[in-house]
Amino acid sequence: MYLHNGKLYWPTTLVKPNHTNPHIKAHYDVIIIGAGMSGLLTAKALFDEGLQVAILERNEIASGSTSANTGLLQYSNDIMLHELAKLLGEHDAVRFYHLCYAALKKIEEIAATLPDKAEFIRRPSICFASKKDDVKKLRAEFEILIRNGFPVEFWNEIIVKHRLLFEAPAALYTMNDAEINPFKFVVSLAEQLKASGVHIFEHTFGNIIEGEGTHITVKTMHGNFKATRIVYTTGYDRLPYGKIKGADINRSYAIVTEENPHFEGWYEQALIWETARPYLYLRTTVDHRVIIGGLDENRAKPAKGEEKIEAMARKLLEKLHELIPNEQFHAPYSYCASFGESYDNLPFIGQHPQEKNHYYLLGYGGNGTVYSMLGAEILADLIMERKNDDARLVTLNRKYGLQ
Image (cartoon, rainbow, N blue to C red; front, side, top):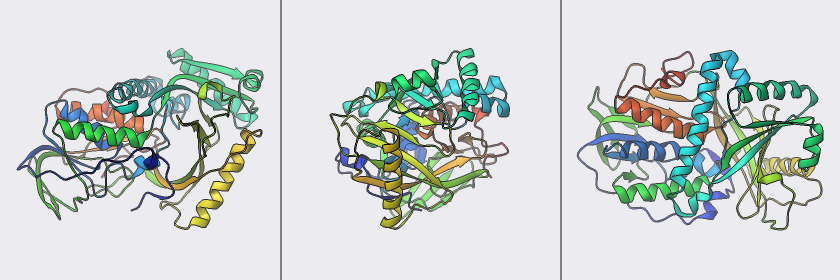
């Protein structure tokens, strides 16, 4: 399944180094299927444990959802904390939010070792009420966040009008979020791991997976790979082994504007999103562009025709001009991309319920990069047979899990 269509921006920001597949070793401790954000972060976590790791990618490094990822990193999730607390209980919901908060710090530490820090920059987030009825929702979210120690402010209509370029009935201002160039992050991390000894194989499709217990064989056109354990980090693409229950694949649209270095007034270059579902989201880039996305549709495959993508791009430009009426924007980059959402708003991370040496990191939801980081750490504990009390929150052995 192709995961995006249209003109992407991130791949234009970095010339990807030429890649040559290494010789296949007789045996690996772990094989990872998928060389996107989840695959590379998992590889780093496991390599840091001293394991021999190989990554198999059916296309090229960072060519899937990573290239279409808009690079907003937030500890808040598509489901608000007070809503998640109703599903999981406040203790577990708060713990999950704290995991997301900690994962941001870990991403920052890894980015600091990469060229240009992969454009990782700490930013605040602003979630504004799309309509007056949503003010009560924001107030409830503020109260549970502040009660549990998260850095947040509640802005009333007067503060919003004073600080933003548009009006809204209220907003939440959360601190210590971030933005990143996901393509630079994944490609640069791949080069770092290759230099350290991780084996990465592009254009290598593991279409047959055999074996039981610790004797796993992945058959490909380029040869057979043998491993003790296997991790699936295929994102929203088809799983080669196992089937998710309780998730939908939808599609969304995004545009990236031309450079506008004279554009001012964007409060602290904050990440901006709204309470409506589906929601619009906005951010800026280091070269003074605006990224805006949304207009989600309940269809799995990205739009094929240019006319459809251009029509949705015009709608996003209209939305942008509504929010920032005194500026004129043009969008040389516009695309449509698939994304996954789980029914219980949690990612799928952990061991297969029956096959204990098969592991999964599938960051379904709008916070996928953060899920990739926290998931990599959980999987490292599970594979190294260390106790991890948080694994139960995202286990595959749940109502909406894996079969």
